[in-house]
Image 1 (cartoon, rainbow, N blue to C red):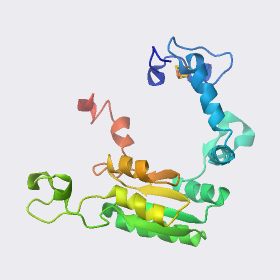
Image 2 (image 1 turned 45 degrees about the horizontal axis):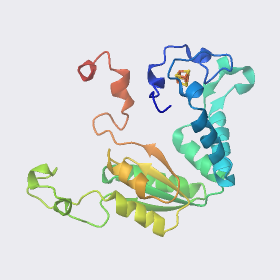
Image 3 (image 1 turned 90 degrees about the vertical axis):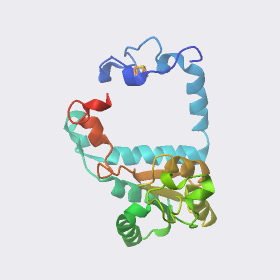
Image 4 (image 1 turned 90 degrees about the horizontal axis):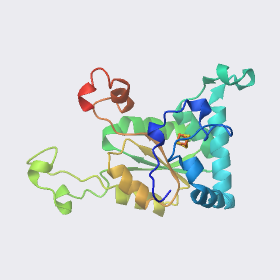
Length: 224
Ligand code: SF4
């Protein structure tokens, strides 16, 4: 794959006929399934680690259990579970008892609900807000006009400390709730436990960024 970049998002082959889904399927010239033998071998090697293998196995079992009517055939399956339930079920499958929640100050109500839900399912939760540490935005070089509330003290989002609080608590699995673009990246870089995302931040679209994608030929056409 060194000389060609993978462009699966531009693949023109019908989904069921793609070589990544069908052993007799077709491929494009720069198909990573056809050209990525070395990476395939390396990735398969990674699954030989028993912890990775168990994680991958339980994630795929959870994936399948996200559908009803599987016994009727692929054409009849229907989605069965909200993501929050999948996270709870996956945590139990992995025998995790201590979950970390890294949440945004803009979603304090949602964090309380998530806390109650996890507790009601017997899971212990350590939670930490993005503004933890009360570090002023000036500490990372921001000028007053670059803050949301200009002329006022403003705590920076501190995803590195969020990760450290959860690392220190030795959480087994972390859930991200509404972290900003980039802050989520820093959290993911610094967290020690595996992480999943309950929701991403989209201030405009009710934390549903795909709304703009679904409307790309309509109200959001100017993005193209
Ligand atoms: S792996 Fe190959 S066949 Fe599958 S989407 Fe990518 S380019 Fe298309």
